[in-house]
Image (cartoon, rainbow, N blue to C red; front, side):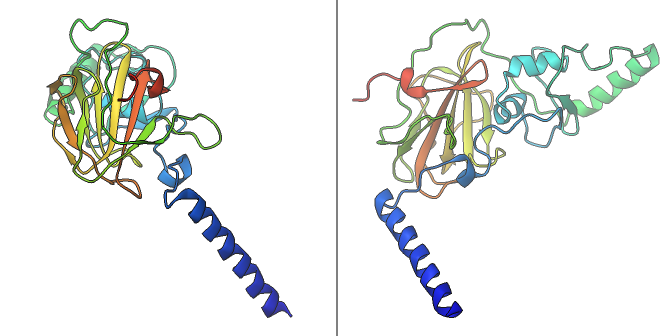
Length: 259
């Protein structure tokens, strides 16, 4: 009986779903598929800057080093970009403001005039902390919550760790540095804060209910920078990442033993 077979199949599927839910304790692991973009996407050859973007957030989205991205596009150490600007995400270094490096004198004047007009719309991004060195960072845990998700790079990669908590729990800067992104423009991260610590390391704090800092703010290790939330995820949690030279690394290899 076709109808009976179809009903039996649906029943078996429902049993399987129920069994998986019971085994997970009600927590669905956060994966690239479930977040729809939290894990870095393959970088296209070009990218058009949108309102709210910073050089850091673009580099973070595609797993690139922000310094290399600046170099490719001839952007100086102020790291200023503007909406509508077209950036190359791949390729060699270009001359500042001109990917071809072949501007005429009149074109240079026009470009300079346009740059001045755009400066009022530009999204200024502060350079890395002045005098920042390359080397180790003194890390602490960004939250007191229990570890519920580990770093992984397999078929369902997780570019950081996930910490449980309640909405409103404090989120702390894991090390001293400068805020280089504070917003909700990266799909899958919800309300996100990115902190630049030195020439090698950045950290990110995702899914916050409230962000308490703004771009260019200097923060010290242990400062409260946000409140835990569930923006961009199915349950309250803090998603925490560390990136070294633009690449995700396992935070558990850098954080001290959890008390």
